[in-house]
Image (cartoon, rainbow, N blue to C red):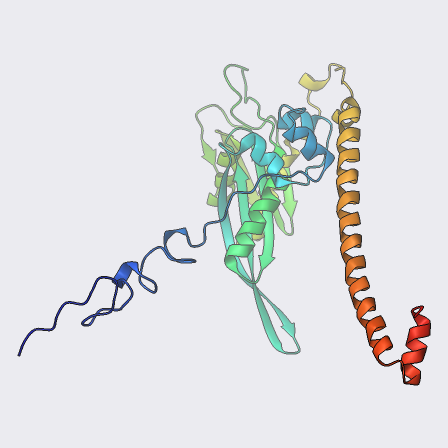
Length: 314
């Protein structure tokens, strides 16, 4: 029996899969929506929506400390990314399922606790619930960046070298959990449980004694109590802060002209978009009314046609 002649290139022959084999349509090549690019999100340019965001993007504010100095609320996580994107690290502390009883049964969602820090005096904590784990983690990271706070560091005794511990005893409370941070000598390390030890390291504290009371097995409250204790380091007016300081104007007051110009520009853009939408709606209405008028002329013999003709000026 003679062998079958080889099929021409690009056509189906033998036991092949047809249309070019693997590289063709339906194979394992880099097709649309498949391959290595699946799930990759395109990086979008940040368009600030708050006054603080516009000042940060234009370089009017040099650091996060300027924002904290005037107690300006941060409403966009991109502001934190702008200053600390290279050094900021996140850690998922816990993911737990939570349930809600409904008439249709139990509704299960996932709760994520995420901490972010730069190991240099900044720490943030975010808590988010969502139907999916990935969505909960993503939302918790955003909330943690928005809630980023500065951590004040100090010395145990002699003020030599870089600050290495908390400046004084501080306490954080959440539920039944009480966490107390105590200054420690240089070289002591972090004498703490795994949960506060992770947060203290992300905050940039090298030496610290800790004391915890309550139901510390409730990890959510344990994490929050530690975060509240770190946040309280700037709540005490220690003697080195007693001297008077002269503060300048707020960034909003200093750059009022710039914010006014951008506001006018944004308003003009919104008005233009609104006028374009109105024109589009008017054109659609004219087309619809024109069809009604032509129908009324065709039906002019009937009373409905006469009435519709009088209505539209026919």
